Image 1 (cartoon, rainbow, N blue to C red):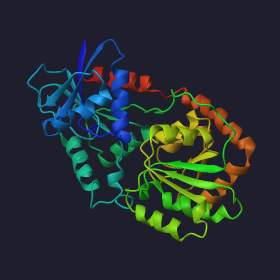
Image 2: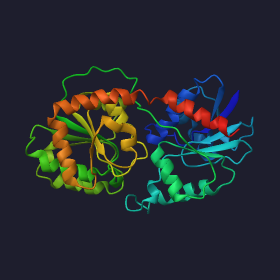
Image 3: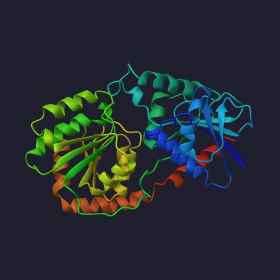
Length: 349
């Protein structure tokens, strides 16, 4: 029996971010593997919030870091950090290296500590291996840390809504974006592109579903407030799971021309709802979607605008993208993620 302890310190909130969702879905799937005895762990400083962790991980045994109990065989830090100092083998998940692209992130806020944490992980000889979520990020790690001696394992993610049932209806005239309003996700460029075509598609709306606390979010909000097509923009802020499923199920298309993504779970989510997808011809998006998306140059607003027009009008393209997406979705599931993670665990024992 492989005893694995995974750090759950991140999931002490009701509303989970992408990394929080990764931890929850991974723990669920790892628990289904008979040869793994999975345990949760939490920093002492967050132990008083353990009830929030327990609502996400169910009956999974939960220990403090450091622990005075049974030593695991492997300790997994799933969110860039390794808080455990014991004798177990250690593995860390690096989700992206956005913080190494200072033009896209707010280095005055959280990104600088993240950069320092990543550098610490890469230089720590007690870390036995690195997990990451795409071949693109693996190549970024190799690029920024060319002398890294640790093995790097790619464990792709999956759609969070794939198992939810829904009734596919006639799509409503709105384009959907899901994600925080953030500079690196190019939400401002998307809004500028939509404004370029808004007069020709007066019955269409652009729905932005995501928190408004990202880097330079105020630029997006100000642009919309000053746009003469303001009424065609719909700002949703952070939405519930039920509302998000409804937004996916009824959208005309999903639009995600991000500058930088380590993986891009919303792309897979949209595919699982049989939505035609428009995304960027860069970073991890092409790796994930391949022939199941329409690609644009995120650095050219005109390219995004042309893509928006095409995904609204071209019904043949829409059908082809949805059909291609079915083949892509078959390659991604949290069960596959867990199996690839298990292979990485075994390799360092």
